[in-house]
Image (cartoon, rainbow over all chains, first blue to last red; front, side, top):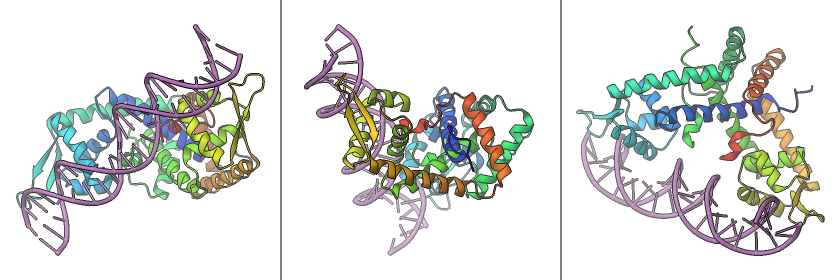
Length: 154
Length: 154
DNA sequence: TATTGTTATACTCTATAACTATA
DNA sequence: TATAGTTATAGAGTATAACAATA
């Protein structure tokens, strides 16, 4: 069987396009003064508010020590806040502030623009097919929904 | 329009799966004692033998100083060699050695296994559709065929 | 004694820029 | 003077492990 060829197989195309997509999205959130890891954390807190830092770190696949620095930066800018649990004062539940919610809205807007830019050239039917195929692969590969594996290192 | 949802849009899925694919492939070539940037360089030299280091660095999107270190490591292991151009002794043309060719064969084998693993669950027709859609996006986005943008940093 | 969060330290990777040799 | 290649240096980002507070 001959695989298309000069552009490489689908696995390579996936890696290539994935890195490209991440870079371009990184450029967009940079305009909001955010890095990709910060954006991933904001998304995680928006999706599951009130989790502890340990829980978040586990979910995002990064050491807790790294999460502290991320939270510090975003808390200083008033985008999220630590709330001590009175029942167990060791725990710091994370929540978005009002400013953080607003910022999250801008991130979502950037994501929509990014998506549209990337899929330019595909019609609605083709976009649906692509979404379905990628979703099936992601499920099969055991990817955690909404969590970018590269936030571990990028 | 409602986009699938919990797993995010196609752009996010692409970034997520791309990072996953790169990591998994990195694990495979690690068994050959190679890093991903080394693998990318071997592929580039195999595809276009005899190019200068400057030309290769430009094509791979990395500074020449970084390429030197990569070439050093692979040359010490006898996988590729610098050949001085007698007409212009500043130029070092890069070629795979016989051992390098052999290693490149093993890399290709790893890539096939990787591809098959990743696309497990899709039938041949679906793989063809995916390949076609990804190829069109890659072209539209101006991606250099065969060059992973992340070799700039990963 | 165990767990949450924090801080300190060390390591890897990378780009920038200075340097050498050839032209 | 300009270009190919090399080496040196410094910076960013990260994980590991020690530490402090709370249970």
